[in-house]
Amino acid sequence: MIAIVPVVDEGLGNSSYLVDLGDGRALVVDPVRDPAPYLDLARGRRLRITHAVETHLHADFVSGSRELAARGARIVAARAADLRFPHQGLDDQEELDLGGLMLRAVATPGHTPEHLAWLLLDAGRPLALFSGGALLVGGVARTDLIAPEQTEPLTRAAWRSLQRLQALPDDLPVYPTHGAGSFCSTPGDAERTTTIGAERAHNPLLAAPDEHAFQERLLGGLGSFPPYFLRLREVNRRGPRVLDERDRTLLALSVEQIRRKVDDGALLVDIRPAKAFGAGHPAGALSIALRPAFATWLGWLVEPDRPLVFVLGRGQDRGELLRQCHQIGYERLAGELAGGMAAWRAAGLPEGHLELVAPGEVVGAVLDVRQVSEVEAGHLPGAVTVELGALGSDGGHGLPAGPLTVMCEHGERATTGASLVARAGRGGLRVVAGGGPAEWSQATGRPLTHP
Image (tube, rainbow, N blue to C red; front, side, top):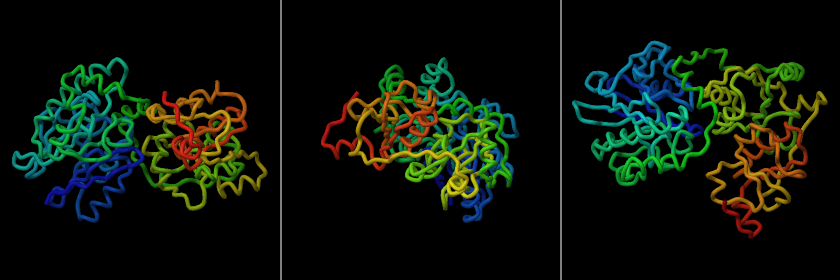
């Protein structure tokens, strides 16, 4: 019996899918770089993964198709993607024979020029649509990630692709790749899967009366996106390196080795929670707490070829750190500080501190590092609003003089922002922890300002 099992990456906001073909074989649609979830699922179901199927050249993560190919799978992708490694390329309406089932390519350009959706059929009857970014729950994937001059033609193509997809049966299940939390997505629903009929009834982009209205609705709500989006398409076209056992370990380095690597250009990244970082960290370290969104902020703030060394806290998952770095193509991972912060202190080296305050304790100048879409819902009166990604580009120059309190929604991004400002030589920094503007308003009884 056919079964479709979603594998959700909450940090990237994406879903991939293991499709149990019902005969001991399986295929994976849009796999991420770490093959472990698919291999574990296949092992538990006694399946052999025979195909890795791509809907498009991904900008937000390194594809895992080559990882699965190294374990016996055949890669299937759009011929127009021009992949530079062994694969089976298909064009619009061409089909992959799965032994009783068929997988049909449906050209759906828009999110990318080469985009294919994949229609799974049984004796000609549609069973499922793997829509990639052509149709999402409540939206479509953004069309501005290739180049400015391509945004308008890709948006027109996305409109035509939507008209094509909405001709499919109302009860057809739809399995998108991008979803809530993905910077490839337009604002949409938190659900991960849908049907053609549900989207016809509720998707505001699908309901646009004409192409012009569609374009205004789609492009009017787009925010910023991480700069690594502009390079990963080519990484995935060329073919990412298949990882080996050496990539699954992080060398333990002495304080002196860490210092030498930093002197030679490596960046020291402290992945401990905000509270631990505030209590004391190596002077000059960049704070990015290890959490589902770690990879996004690493890719947003750190150049891809820079060697990285890390400070970890007790019990933090090194495997998860490595997985997230590899997921966006960061491979120059030089090691971690052996003994953690205790070793740094024992060596008597310079240490930085950040004062953490509750939302109701905010005084003086405020820097709000949330995204524009969040700020539009309200910010503290007089706050300076600079997205965290933009703050990284100038080190916080032009900010108000004197003591400065940095805030976001919970504290992690604010701590990252404060560490960037501190790296630029600024002192007197505080971070709001455990809440954001809404909690400030509740604690103080004062209203928020709306831009």
